Amino acid sequence: MTLVSQSRRAAASVMLALMVWSVSFFLHFFWEMAQVPFFSDMPDASHWEVIGLCTRATVGDANIAFGAYVLVALFTKDWFWITKPWRLSTLSVYFAIGLIVTIIFEYWATGTGQRWNYSDLMPRIPLLGTGALPLAQWVVIPVILIYAVKWMFLGWLVSKRTERE
Image 1 (cartoon, rainbow, N blue to C red):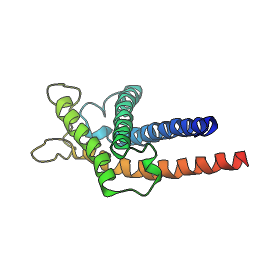
Image 2: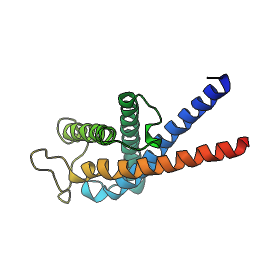
Image 3: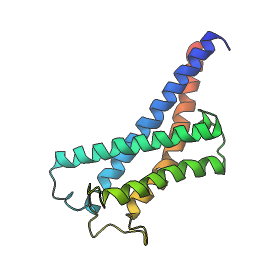
Image 4: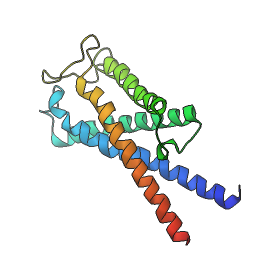
């Protein structure tokens, strides 16, 4: 592999990482804002307090999504796994990581961590006590994320190829 192709691969790796994190942030932020009525005290908080709390939660969500992406890349031994046909085992690992981390974090945050409380509007998963919306978030958002990032990244690769010609 030549130095130029190594440089292009490194640039593509960085671009893919930025896309995964930033698209995840964008999608999770809107989900977090939509969940405001389902958490106690949030509907009564000021606009800027809600934005601050949702932004902090979203940074955590984007980090979880990126961490899941990296773990799947290690599992598949392919950083660019998202651009190829997906296998059930790959997607299962990706979704499982987000769901497991969410269950553990929600359990801690609504329990001993006392980070937040659900309002009466939040549907709960029996036995777990975890909110259904935070779990749904880790099914809906990853599906949109992997399609969006695949589409964006492949488009970026085409634009780079066109620039070189």
